[in-house]
Length: 595
Image (cartoon, rainbow, N blue to C red; front, side, top):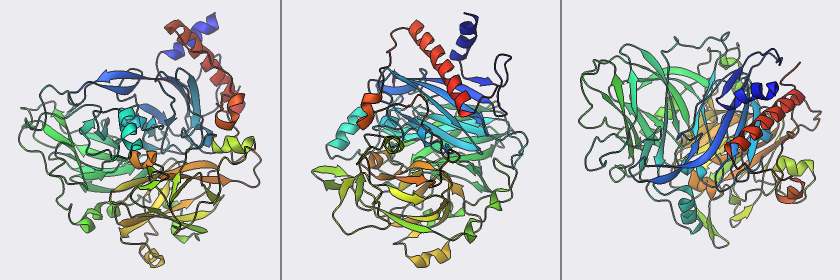
């Protein structure tokens, strides 16, 4: 009983475990979280609706870790449908079993729980998590991730006063199931109903556009202090311009890599992207200041309601914010000018990231390219009577059996390794076609957006170098314009409509990794694939095996044992204790905890 009383302490809050007399740990600490995923009712735009909460909160809690920490997250699915949580930007070194997308994991059934266990190996930076299945992110379930530098690795700027986090995103008053129905019937999602900032609607800056009584976000600051402002676009499909009235945004980091420090008056943040800035509170506080996230690369005069507004409040402020919002850039009809900003983002090559060596010590520009893939996006098309989105003419069909699990049990016909290197002239089709990537290869991927909308592309398991982007159709001669010295390394990049973006990737992380468009409507309609990367001499050193608690589905459903459903808080407590014990046992077997 004493042991049970001791273990029950872990179930209340996220716990940072350093050392206990009854446990002995390896050098890297372990952090435990409990995520209870459920529906709650909220009215962020003044209309009551069902949103997805984590531990009763919308948005979810901050997942706060330090380089090389081991993370254990027990997820309890209290939704009425299956769930997977994914952690984009967390590279899951050697361990795609924890990635939380349908090609790597079986979904967690309703009223079941499952424990994720992974290490944030050699990583720092700003990211976010979210539910990856069936448009669920449209209804919430997202939250921020911060990976701090170890104390022995200095950050390339003075220590800020603190962190300020903004989760910004377009928002619909219809939930994900209604939007799924619309997409399934061949309809577009249409214009969003607004933009949320940290789960809240806009400050009433305009009595016509913003109804009375909406709760808005207020950020309290002290004059003269500098804060690290981390901004994540967690929305559905809309690029947003982020700005703070009368304040500069000094860009310092994006998705795990420090940047050359540049000031901006506003910044474009596309769907799925994360950036952090230093913002100094250097104004006279004659009034509060607007914080704005407004729709970009759309008909902005028609999309005025798609604007989020929060308030920056100095402790010595003399009054409320008033007057017009600070304007977004006026280059919407000058695409060449709009592309100037992303081209200006460069890596800080002299700064240390997660390791002591400088970020610029990997000379990617001098490595020979082993393979080139041109991935072309087109507007949605009808395939077999249904509207679908494609890459290279293939609309991806979600695997019924996760890919590496199918490999382990020799499931035949689960997928194909025949994804084409270039767009084909054949009619579009649905398929489970994967990129057969070569371990330790160095590949070039051209993201060619022939769709009419701005898109973001994300790669799980990796960061890549964004070496070039331009309008038109990519040709080999465009390689002459690549940045081969200080291109930013990140995991999510924008691709302008009618344009291309070139990325370079060093394939050193064995597993199966999702490559997808981050715009949730296009992703749902099949605009994705996976890279399968296998070490032909695998001996257990470069890829972990499946975890002890692996879930089975699809062709392997018969192997799955039933999980008792929780019926009370007491039962949940016992289940939580047992899961923690199981997790500790799993950690010992994986070599994370050593006695």
